[in-house]
Length: 328
Image (cartoon, rainbow, N blue to C red):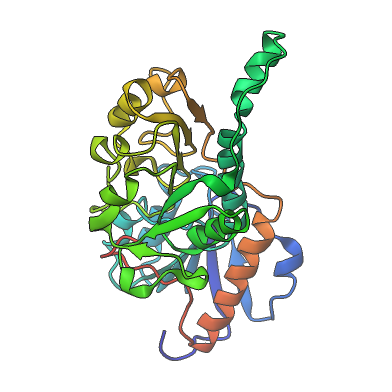
């Protein structure tokens, strides 16, 4: 980031959620002023913007981050509480002098646990057991072990690596698909292939887990060609972005193809409209983009931002710098 900034560092906070952890913020040294979110776009000069979740500020219309950048062209750094940047990229491309950093890794643990819950739900047929209970039928159903599954993991960032850690602990066979296979299979040494091998990787797969960013090249990367090759009775888990999946193709795979279940935490359109056939499609299990939820989210988010602030103040390289051209 160049030379250290002035000790009188000012940061504009936009958004509503999560409420920054007061215990963590108490560890900030003097010479820093956090303004907002109740202060709107704030007054005076600002060095950076901390973007939280939560839509509009009181009395503001439109995107509060956009309003903040427009009011403060002097800002050099934006840190977002989210990990993905697909929704921020169009805005930040208009500010080439601004560095964008993300909170990648903050929600890796709860999301990885959510994925494992989905895979276990599928293997142990909990939906079928619930239905038998509802019908008061005391019948045995054949169950599977997670260790018998061949899992294709698309994306090998912080979330993907945490998913792999847990799946491998239960002896699943995991292969990773990543945009740059030359970077290797992560700390677990997974077999890894590039995007060009995705379709072949899906051949005979028991589970397909999506943990990749949404970019121009990854949009609708999962379609008929991939889903029809999966094993009979297989499952799809999407905790990333809905745009990664061709939703009509997914519906076809569930009704006339090999797919038995789809665990969807992200959708092409959010909130999911009432008219979407996904609400009632057989084998679909929906959640309202909450796989990241954790009682530790505010603390971890604030700790990461505090560390970033210290580096920014000292003129050191920031962590999690986003590449707008690549889309993550």
